[in-house]
Length: 488
Image (tube, rainbow, N blue to C red):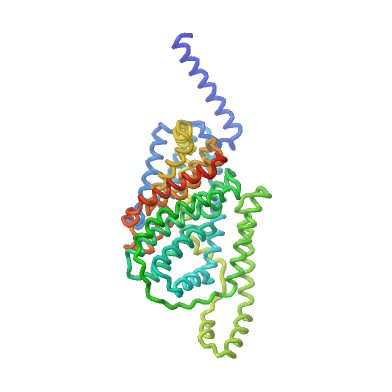
């Protein structure tokens, strides 16, 4: 066969394959999102425009602390424009059903994530309103720990609490403790904030509920619920290596003793029990009934609503009993506190959820989904996972998550659906989760603390400890490859 005939045959085969793909996608539009769209837009003006829009939106997100614009705004606009470009191209091609189905599939992915996070945030807000976190902070303050003890206590608490609560809430709680105890010592506060950010991100990496990325991998069915816990030792190493190095730079002084009495509000312990029950139900829904975990979380939200109803209806009777008891004891301080008691309102707790974060997730998921439908995720997958060893690809993506938030990184990997072993899926879960610790803006915890400890914990303060954090990042990867070698 001559070169010209071979080229003609390849073109004919390509046209035939193209017609077959187009026919299948038109006949079964639900398959349109399972692979890149039938129209490859990666080199077109529409595709390049969409990529530029995403880059511009993310540049504005990364400049949040400078321009004081909430991070959800640019990605919401970018998501709308990207999908408008996609829809217009497909309308012009006469196959609008494909882009419509792709959008619906992407929206479903976000909806499951939204409902899960909304319930988790509502429970966290309810516990905060019942003063559970205030009581923990007051206990730590009353003990009068040394600076070095406080450094390790807040680090370990951040590590373990973030495995069930989100890393941003955990980091802000520990930051409040440090700001209260070490007021005026900006150097120590900055050091502790770096440690808390690293610990919070590491603690979320070994639990399905600890971070958005682990939740996405679990909901995607790539790793079973119990499978994440093999990352416990690598996560501890990721936290311990930089913490041990930073420990030598702490002056082991004793802070001034502080006194703060905090009383838990009625029902606080029962809400903790309901939260744990809700988590258990969510796990069973996914592992036994094969239903999305969001269904179990929404069931748990219903339980919390019923309990809130009980607290409201029984409040007058409870207050009367307490007034009688405190009057007999002569405890006038607690009698005065009873006058400030307000009924528990579940919908006010829902309203206090981090809506900017939830809307940011919407924008990111829709942006990445649109770029994926244009063919960019397939191109990235072929470049990284086709030409590279998956281990190196996952390590590099973890480093990228220090600049680009780990949520779009993980969503992109899940959308690519590379053929990887469970060990490699756990590796990308680890690297995407802890890679954001390398920079202060690389994780939600870091961004939150830059606002909470404004002028004390800054980008530059965090940057000084990047070599130590990078050493912990490399050590945790090595530990995973060694300990969990049978999973690769």
